[in-house]
Length: 108
Length: 112
Image (cartoon, rainbow over all chains, first blue to last red; front, side, top):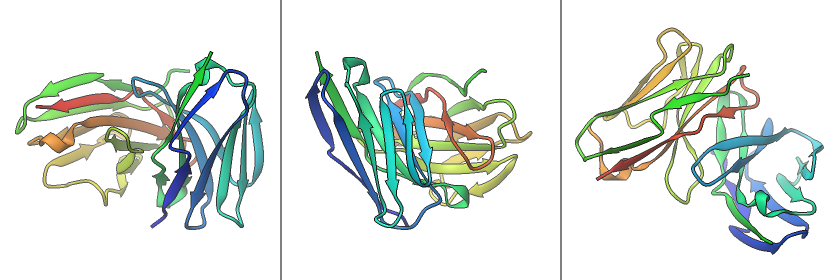
């Protein structure tokens, strides 16, 4: 069974700062997902990646398959980026294993 | 494109009562997932359907939880009888096959 660890659990930063959230998993996977969850519960899928790097706007996700590690970066952070960011590893017939999430607060 | 729909959004019941949640996935998505998310934790998969067949229900507490997706489209998740520890957000997600999952808004259940 895959184990997914995220760090940090909580992160408070000032507007404009560069943010990094890390995710490690224990078992080789077919894909890794980064999700964003706002207060109220709705979850939005940000990225699904199996190698290299993906970029969408101010968000960048990277994955190192050999090291079983992924990072989510936010450039020029803004208060509207405040949310819980969840890493989920796996996919396919094995389903996803979710981390506990990183609670990010961006202060103006 | 319409997203994943869930209802109700909120439900408050007393322990030992029954409750049902409904999910309508994105049109054309073969795979449907039900997750339970307890406060402060990541979502936990309860059951995964592909069309109307069950792919994985290993973490579904089958003594009290049941789910169905009879026509391979909508799905219902039922809890009978509810316990205090069932208080959580129940998330439905769908995907074309086993790729990117799209999540619904969730149903927040409070069991008193």
